[in-house]
Amino acid sequence: MRYHKNHTTSPYKDSELLLEINATKTLSEISKTAFKLYLYIRDNSLRVKNEGVILFDFTEAKEMCTFKQDKSIYNALSELINKDILAGRKEHDEFYYNPKFINYKKEKS
Image (cartoon, rainbow, N blue to C red; front, side, top):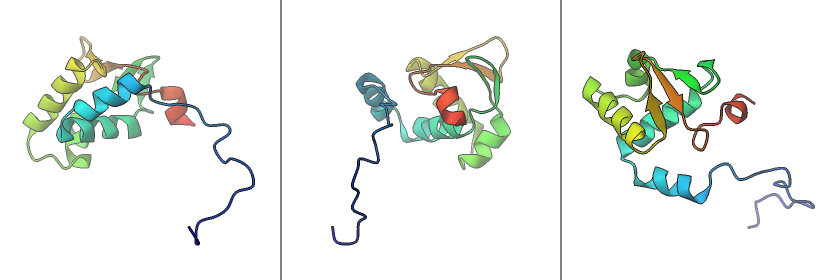
């Protein structure tokens, strides 16, 4: 560990657990496609309509995740909904998000 910085105090003293063990287990069980979409949603979760609701842009998601077919997005969304990471709403481009997986306040800072 010759080239690593040596700390005199813990650099993690103000850190907190972001994902509990059950959330980590759930994320490890989803497909690569669903995980790619999950990361896209986490990175773009600042587009929040109101507390607990995200706005989802299908075209941008398809481009950013480099999906070739719309089917990939629909399958990934379905998987995220089945795993209780997202929940559907009446509007097709809005979803409720589970704060165990996407924490708007932490993502924003």
